[in-house]
Amino acid sequence: MHNHSLSRLQSLVQSTECLTVYHQLLRDGGVARMRTLLERCTEPSGVVDVAAAYHRLVAWLLNHQPSVYLGGTSCWQCHILGMVLDDDNAFTRKAALGGSKQVPPHLVEAVQRDLTILQSLFRLEATDVREASSRALFDEDWEGPHPSWWTLWDFPSSPVHTEPWDGGRRQEMARHLATAADWATCWQELAQYHHANGSGPMARYYAFQWERHGNRGLLRGVSNPDPVTLADLVGYQAEREQVITNTMHLLHGYQANNILLYGDRGTGKSSTVKAVAKELAPLGLRLIEVPKHHLRDFPFLVRILRHRPQKFILFVDDLSFDEGETDYKHLKALLEGGLEARPANVVIYATSNRRHLIKEDFADRQGMDEVRRGDTLQEKLSLSDRFGITVIFPAPDQEGYLKIVEGILSARGLSIPPAELRQRALQWSLWHNGRSGRTARQFVDHLTAELGGRSK
Image (cartoon, rainbow, N blue to C red; front, side, top):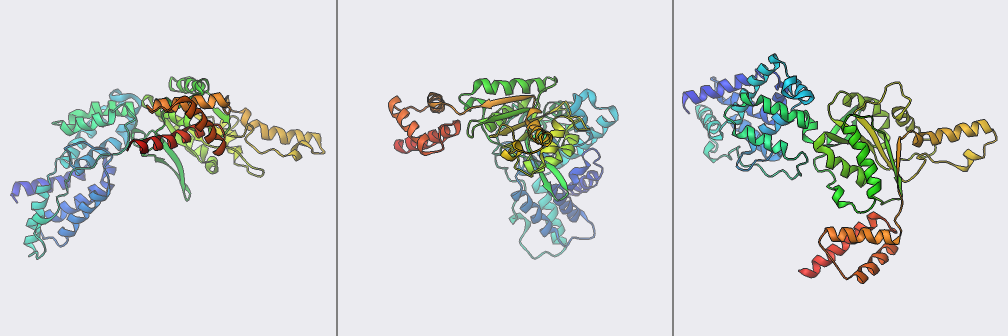
């Protein structure tokens, strides 16, 4: 290997130590393995584990799908691009709030230096590294396979099987960096990208799940959220319009209401929330699903979200409480009445098959003490009253159910004789779960498969 190439690799190892704004990228598994390999290749005193370091890097890249895919760009390069776009740091947070104008000059200088270093990592050639490995190994009287037989670590990346939800901004920014002559000059475009998409996980995902691991709670981004769209949903247009209008109020900075979506099972309550979130995600909306048994984490969660520029729906699906459960009190406090106010960028959307959410027994109405009876009833009824808007999704009548079936079938470009469709759809509803939007979709799924089988 030429001395100037070896010197360049040594310089790259040293420069990565100078990352400041993007310093936490040094903890990334791929970058850490690459740095270990380069260090072992360039140490003047000789190398013992060069082959192991090389193949640990290759194995890591094979088993970790980059979050960005660009045709003709290597797996390593896509990994670097994904890290730059996904990092949550002082620059990306400032940019998310106000674009390039929000970033102070001293931070701009630091970002430009870091981007230059990261571009050097991006441009690292597998052949150069393999030559460095060869030099180090044969200085050590290596007796194993020649490095020319080793798998190159810059193999093509595989397509990312996630539907772009941001209008293609992420892909466009990745392509811009991949073709740019100097990343240091791209900081303004990168700042505007974060202003539009957010910082860290908020830039990569629009849907999240709140999880608990021991004493720690965290937001886990959902790589493949439910693909349902508003165009997929047939019927209940007036009900959905209430949800859309309230969510637009949230996005425009007005005081938005919490919403309880109540109705029979299978009527599209949950699908409505998911579809609205997907439709409005490019405008800065994020959906966070919170399991009922984690409602006590609401105070911690809203503190995380309070100063984020995005707007958030905290989504509690199938909400109801049995006798003796007390977690509903955490929800009551956040809805209205708690010491810490709900942030203006957060709303709660909950779905339920039970209008009053908390199970009510006849014993609650037949207590001997009238005052105590009234307190018990008020306690149980006050939770649902604290939602500003209640949207009711009633079970469709027969004709409504058939219209939903026809709408879904038409959207899929399929048709069968009307009389046959009517007979079979009604028969399906008798045999499977009654009349609902879900039943209609399940019938059309079955019919689609059947018609597809006939065409083969």
